Image 1 (cartoon, rainbow, N blue to C red):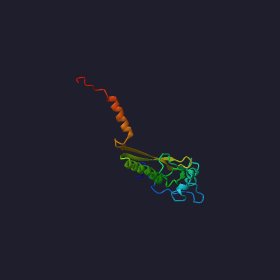
Image 2: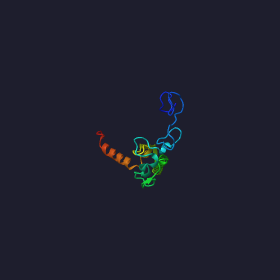
Image 3: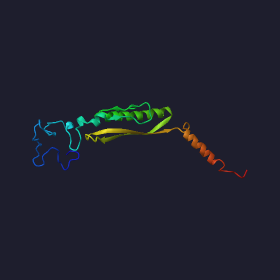
Image 4: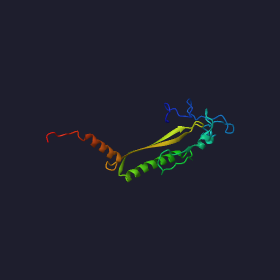
Length: 171
């Protein structure tokens, strides 16, 4: 049974005889891909789409660019990635952000509490191909209390708020 199949139905199988379905068209005049391999499925225009994935201008011109404020990561300037290699290159780029978070935490005596990478996908409106449209890295770093200026400010404000709150009249 295939994933998404219904009750043992196999795609490209005849429901009545169980034999493989054959295309009645010859490879010369075939406009759609048959099971007999008359055309490559990636090069056939799907119904309702403007082009086939092999000739899609949108996929050919798609560029990726990093939008973060980190300087030492790839894709700071827009560049093209082929749809076939986009997933691995975007994941590698997002892992650069994770690596930078660990370096920053080590330099400032911090500890990385959490680092997660999510990869986003979209569907090309022209050819219908699913492609990697971007990624997002989230990191949480905890720093020691002595060096963090925000913690020092909070302690100073707490000290001002509690000064004079406890008075001993017995003296």
